[in-house]
Length: 496
Image (cartoon, rainbow, N blue to C red; front, side, top):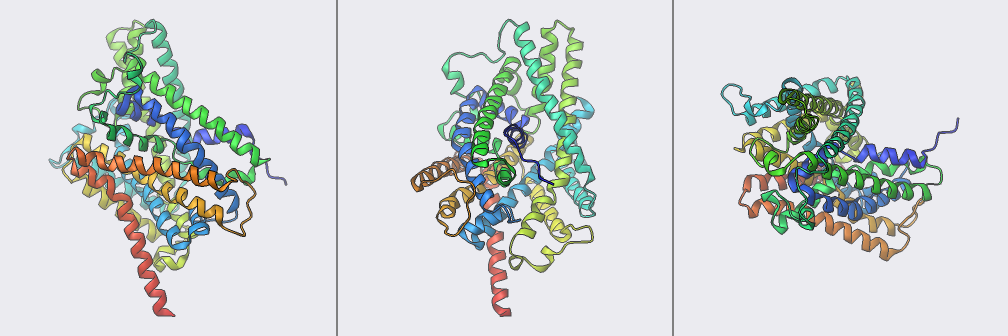
């Protein structure tokens, strides 16, 4: 039976569902206000589109390989560098598990109580941050316990969560437009000229270095493009369909992000709603949704009590949507990236126990090793003396840098991939060497600049705790990968 081919519309929808994230818009508005829009546009032009086309070439050339980006890197720059680069890619998922294990309690609390109560939680006299940290450790251990037994059916919740998040986006857009109409076009966050789209209302993002570091947030918002590289062989006429679909997707996603950020300004005045200590990068989405409900009620001339109830309902719906999406994703991501890397890479690079699968087909030992690493990292970050606001900044920065860092390997390896002889290339966009080199250099400058400035900003602000945890992820996991390689190489040499 002939396999159904992916159409242009199907590719666009697939790209939208893979890349667009509702919570990215709330983080962007919190960090930079309207000024984040220009960085999201630059991120799309200088990162999303060029890298997606690169990954399409990788994916079509190595379509029969099962190691994902490991196979791409191994076929371009060799297995050793591929192992280190992919190990750092794996670390981005480990950091995601770590940050989400802590953040998942915020939508859970919001669903139950109508607002974020985690900052008041306490266990045995511990602070709220430490209490949430302990719950996060319990969460990762519990999920791993279920996942190693093959109980991954709960991952279906992620698709239900995805539907809820889509509804959340629609409700947010409709409610914002209704408020704009009923308020006669008045914006809660006024536009006072071109400066509103250049200068951030957030005092932490006023210096040039801090502003440029926001590029990492934009790159993070567009992360996931590497997963699209393997679908070119399932398309009809991919040489035309794929670039056309990506250009259309890039325009749509950029407009959706830019418009969403602007829509938050209809109901949310930055200084009155966000400019105080109760709002952090963990609960920002639920604070903004609650505020949206209250302002909608006021615009419709409801009573104060009714407006408050509407705000609580919006917050609860956002909490339920995000909690279900997080939970479903967790049960997949706790084993999927780890399993694909271990099974796709050279088994000689791993200790024997790491590559063994249990009766359910799960790399049990590797998954428990991962769980322990995540638990230890959560413990050290949580008990490192940071308050709730700083805690979520650390988690967000760690996630952003760890997610962005592997792209350096993929982009830097691309010119080497293009120079490789004897490869069958069914899909090519970058046909001239100078274009390949120029685009690779531009994207690398964007990535290295964004990561570098994100790492430097807390140092300049003398916030050395945040700086340490922001930088440590890729360095720590890169060192582990190098140690693995060195140990296994010596072991192989002795056995010869």
